[in-house]
Every structure is written in structure tokens, then in C-alpha cells.
Image: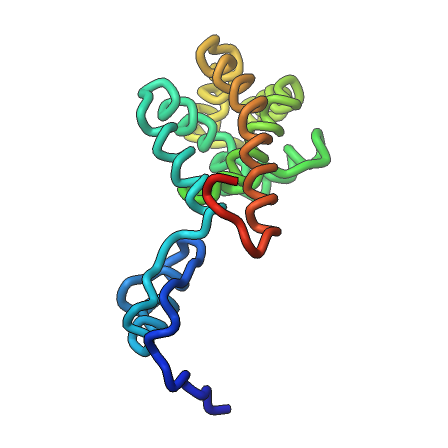
Length: 186
């Protein structure tokens, strides 16, 4: 089906998407395709995505916070990279930890909540994995390292802190996604 191009290409002056390269890519993203037809269609990130960009920028300003999220990513990576470890976690928790991504802060929020809520159970999973005679040296080392994070005062402080803060950003994100018209002041 042929798409009819507006006879007044100057009328479209803005476009807003999330930060994925499919949508916002400067060369091949949707925004680039729209700009090829509508020269005035300036691209801006949607408000919801801007919120996560602000959170990400704030989080990268502190060495302790960067270390915390790097450590937290170790939990999701450890359990998602192996079906055997995922099965142990699911057997104990009846939950999975999602794979963290650099840009999706809702994944970090879920991971923070699970690790915070189920510290004891995750520690038990790590002990089961580390004590398993079929576990290789690397797996034992990683499990032991993650167990140490669950005892580290700095890690536990930031875990509690972000368990309180991130759900609020999630509420704002969802509110911004659901509204068709929103202004930056609101």
C-alpha cells in the first residue's frame, strides 16, 4: 500500500520517540525517514525516555553508584547466562531476574526489587551453586563474589536506597507514557 505524502511538508515540525536506534537512529531510524520527507520535523526524545536519561546521567556521576549498578548487573548476568543457574533461582524464589540493559531502567528497578526483597534466598541459591560439585571454578568464584556483595555495607545501602527511589521513577514513567498531551512543567 502506497503511503500518501502530505502536500505541505512544512506543517510537520516535531517528532518524538524513545531512544532505540530503530526509532531515533540518525541515519536509518524512523526519525531519519520522516526528516527525509518533512525537513522541519525535529526529533526529541519522549518525556518518559528523557526521565530515564536524567536518571542514568545522575547515576553515572557517582563512583559508588556506578559500582553499585555494575555489581547489581552481576546478579542478573550470573543468573540469566545459564539455564542451570536460572533453574536454581526459580526453584528457590519462583522468580527470575531479568537481564539488565544499559538503557532500560525498568529492568534495573525490577532487579533492585528482587535482590532487595530476596537477599536471603538469593544467598541460598549462590551457596547451592557454589557448592555444586559440577560447578566450574569460574562459576564458584562468581557466586562467592556475589555473596560478598550481599554482605557489603555500601552495596546494601544503595540497594535499599534504589529500592525506595526507582519505583517512584517507574510511576512517573508510566504516567508520562499514558498521556497523549503533556507539557514539561506538568
